[in-house]
Structures are given as structure tokens and as C-alpha cells.
Length: 354
Ligand code: TXA
Ligand code: MG
Image (cartoon, rainbow, N blue to C red; front, side, top):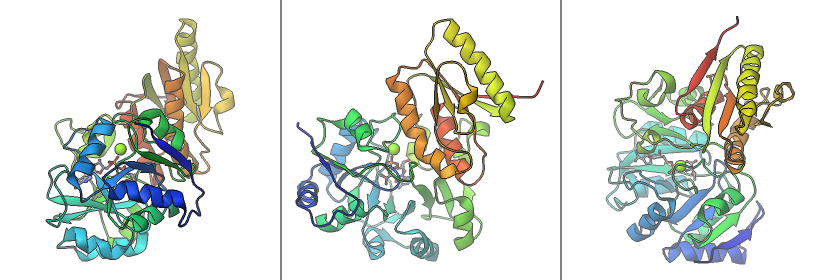
């Protein structure tokens, strides 16, 4: 299959290319498109064969449900039933934006789209191209991140091209995804609301609207009981895994730099390719291997936006060992550490002052 690749600027409206993409989706094809979080791989959510194509292209296990993207809040009622008041409050506050709500599904949503579950994940994205595409197609669009299963989510069209060129109908290049981490997922389908995946809409932001909300205990990293199964099926897979072995170093910054320099020196001297994940504030203090900054500690959003691209760059360099600094485990840092810890298979070294 030849994949049509088109560049679109963020103001795209009524262009022929948008029309073309909408027609592919209506006909049951696959189109990758930008969102404010990461690129999505879209298909008609109400067409079981179209959803099935997504799993095939991504190499994704069929029990891992898809997020359904809508263009207006009212569409929530077409897809979901028994919608609690909190869902409307969160939708009013954070949509369009990086928040996904899990609700009881209506019968019209095919099980192929929900991975066999009785619930449906719904998001109204903020990215202009994404919204124009959904409106123009006049359908709901199921879209997981547009990467091969097990790869970091794509934050640029070139990442999608690396993973899916030749396997899908079209890729819309709308520039860099501004946020860089997948949406926050909140389960409102039963009992007390719960965060199934941390993201740019933080726990505190949610609590300001609907009161106390907890994380799914199975996702909070280091101290997790391995027998607990996360409520979002996708969170159980070892996602975002770089090819090399990734280790996170945690502790006082100067000591972390010292420890990473020491191990990086040892590994490079024994002939291994080494990568270091640093920040704008620390990058000049590393002396071995390939050093890349993912952003500035003064602005955590830049770190969220840079993480996946840097993980992919180390794959391209075939780095055998990657050493990373760690990040504060609060607000946006919680989402960053959640992804980094998963990429590292929870391999973390605590550095203490000697
Ligand atoms: O930001 C995002 O959410 C991006 C963009 C493209 O919108 N999409 C995305 O999709 O990250 P994906 O498929 O990579 O991740 C969806 C996550 C998976 O962990 C999946 O298991 C979970 O959402 N999920 C989907 N439907 C669910 C449901 N009914 N119940 C629980 N978890 C669900
Ligand atoms: Mg994904």
C-alpha cells in the first residue's frame, strides 16, 4: 500500500486534503492525524472492520480498547449511557483537551472498538486539524497512538512514518504535538472516579472540579504489587520501551550527575554505545556518550513534550545503555515519571550522598 503523506498547517480548513482524509475514514480506511497530545491512528469507531484494521497495523493485542474521538460534547450521549454529573463537569472544564473519560457504553459502540469491554473511552481533542477531520468525516474516530505497539508514542509525523509508512492510507503532518504525553484517563463508569493514566490534566486539576480522586493503585510505579491488573488494559503492557537498557538515577542532582558520569565512562570505555537523558540545566556536566536534553526543569511542560522524541533518537543511534535523570513526582512530573518508569521497566537506581 502507498501511504499518502500531506503537510497541513494548524489553521487547515475545508482543504481538499482534509476532504480526502475524511473520505478515507468514511470508507473504512486508516488515517494518522495530529492531536495536541500525540499523533493518533484513526478509523471509523462504529465500523468493526475499520477498528480491526487499527489493531492489525499497530500489532496491538485485541483486548486493548481504543479511545473514541468526538467533535462536540453532546456526542458523549450517543456513545455512552448512565452518564454521571462528574462527566459533564469535567467535559465542560477540560474539553476540548487532553482528557479521556471512561463511561458505560451504548449498544451502538462495537465491541471491536472497546476491546470487548462494556465501557467506552471518549475524548474531544483540542487540536484544530483533529477537530476539523472529525467534523468533516461526520463520524466518530477511534484512535490509539499512531505507533507500532511497544514503541514510544509519536509526537511528530516522521515518527508515524517510521512506524506505519506503507501500512495505512494516509498520514497528516500537522507539525509537532504540543503536549507530547497521552491524555489523562478518568474512569467514571462505576463507583468513585479514578485516574487510570496520569497526563497533562493533573490530579489536582481534576480535584478542583469533582473533589478527591485517586489513582488506580496498579499504575503507580515503583511500589506496585505485580499481581495487580491495571483497569486500563493498555497500562499493563511494557509500553514506550527503547531498544537499549534504560536506567533512571534518582537523588540529589549533583550526585546523580556524578553517578551517571561514572557508569557512562565505564560503559563507553568497554566499547558500548551510551546515551544520557539530561536537561537544559545539566547537559553540559556530562562527559561521556551521547548527551541529549529533553527540556528545562524550570518548565516541566518542555520535558513532557521532549521525552518520546529523545527515546526514539536513542533507538536510532542503537544506544545499548541509556541513563536518565529522574523528575519530581508531583503534578505533571507524575505523568512524566509514569512513562519514564515504564520505559525503564521500573529500573531505578537511588543515589545517596557519600
Ligand atoms: O492522548 C491520547 O489519549 C491519544 C490520542 C491519539 O488521543 N490516544 C491514546 O490511545 O493514547 P492509546 O490507545 O494509545 O491509549 C488508550 C488507553 C489504553 O491504555 C487503553 O487500554 C485505555 O486507554 N482504554 C481505552 N478504552 C478503555 C476502557 N473502556 N476502559 C479502560 N481503559 C480503556
Ligand atoms: Mg498508545
